[in-house]
Image (tube, rainbow over all chains, first blue to last red; front, top):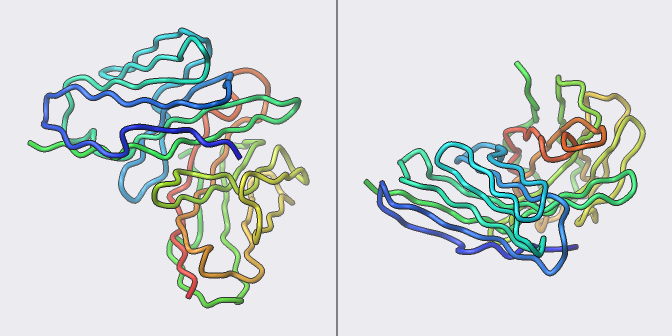
Length: 113
Length: 117
């Protein structure tokens, strides 16, 4: 199946710093999604993007749907300790009655005080 | 409280011993799905179900079976588990209708960590 290339694989940053991560694909997606997974839990949706070029914010998080529909990025501003976790991008295509979601490999974020 | 529950949360078994991981949601969602999460590979879809009695293969279906006899339940069955199925498994559900509220508003269960010896 398809795979999304997500980078970086891991990040170690200090509290207060801004974070940027991105996701690229060889295929076009109709929707881009960003999830966060806390240790020992399932992923939780952070932001959903529906149109090429769309820029959407959710508090300190900002994500963009690339113009080519093959990439997306997520920025976190002024990081705090509770931002620690694994961030996944996911691309969605709709084929007839089905809708398929493909996840990236994840970016592990560590925040130091 | 809206939630997806999985049982068991942790399981250690031996090669070849059939097992079932249950998944249940209380949100009347049509769409349910199983994923496995492995280091460096992210989440990969095993099987999904658009509605009762409607199931289809995801990206990595080999060695797994599912059934959807009721809307709320979507069990994952490993008929003859092997060590390469050692992984962290997630069940997820969402509304299955058209428009933006399809898969993206997926609610994930807490995960089942499986070790096959």
